[in-house]
Length: 130
Image: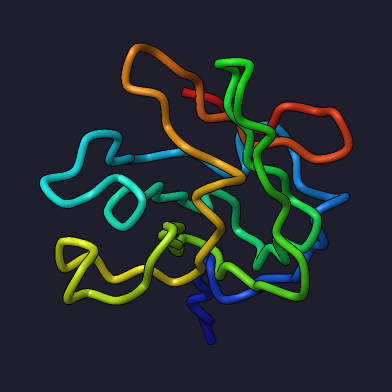
């Protein structure tokens, strides 16, 4: 008897400390929305690993020098092959209609229009940046 098994059927869960370079990828971002920046900016992150990843402790930073960035606090599990959208507002009536999964304070992180880097890091290790 043959038994077909999908590689994706066996997923484990990893905490942020176990996230490796390339496990998370910034796939899209909106730096200049049609609505006010403090409502409409957003970042989409993809879990390219075959594990469910708990993003607790993941840092999202910019490199323009002015923005300190923010850290995801509390358990936030991103399924294997899943996406999460981060933005300053999850109110679709004012953010341009974006389905935001997790909000952050615009004062802590703003994508600079004149050139910036979005960096995903944990404990000083860069996981991905764009």
